[in-house]
Image (cartoon, rainbow, N blue to C red; front, side, top):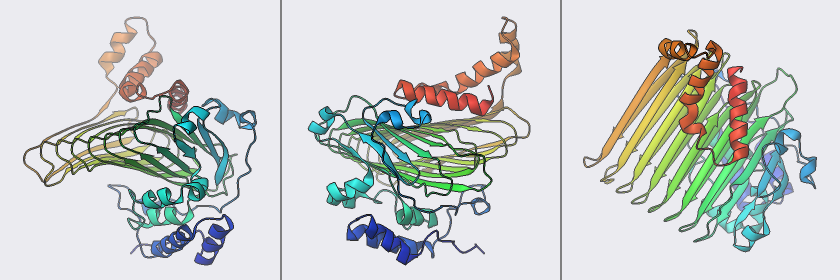
Length: 433
């Protein structure tokens, strides 16, 4: 018997807060409806992970953000990750800084906080908000619908190509403030864009827990190409719960690059829905487990369209007493003829106390398709270490090189220099090097 859901806010308070923020009536009603729905739903069932034992209801309370007039006033941890152009920064419950180049704005590109987009692009947001991730999937999606704040709205018009990556930085500094950003990306026909996000925490030493409950929804219209890089580095006092999901129309493509490098318990669910014929997805994930943290990492592709194509690659490094359950799920629906789904999950163990499970799953309801999977769990090869030491390399340096080589297929795909540097620093921090 599951424990009852502890709501972070009641219906009356949710309605009052929504109205105080000037949200449209439909959003106010949606928040209230989702809050009531949360009381009737259960936590998601994760393979070999007892999420009900995690502190998944410490959402804090909404605290208005104070905007920052200049990029120079941002925290150093933020400024080191980006440049003062095409960037949105959220601290705790709200957006504090946003800037889009005049050139992109003139082409009709919208890159703003989601709360502002409710007022400036209300019908467009209403059409797509919580359309890819459904509010009634489980208690987490319902609660997110009810308490989300800040967030990003990215819209790219038809035939527009955005050459430079657009960046969003989500930072939690106040351990008592709600941290539940919602990202909504809509790419019209034959549009192209790259979106890079960092999710970080800078809390003083504290015993209290806080839950990050984030959602990234992507709608790729016919022929669109959307690249998404998502790098998480939340602290041990954070429980990181994230849904990333994209739906691809005819000949559209979505590429995910995900770095799960936090130090607390975490659930990461990254899904591509290949709805249209000829649609494609490529999902690459790395995670590093340390201490006693537990990670549930799921990549999933659902093929509906004919001749749709998917690739999934997950690389995990586990040390200390950490546990990671790595799930790769390829689902090919009836009618998705000529579909091709390939996946690989590999886990590198650095400690006899660590645990890593790689679970490749193929669910095929159509005959004329291609599908394949590979999975492995192993330790650093003594032969490789010996060979490198025989060339004058120390054992520590040899181990480091092997680990970086293991993660390289994902790390090398990060689309900008600042993002790559941030990812490498997080990896070094987690590996204690």
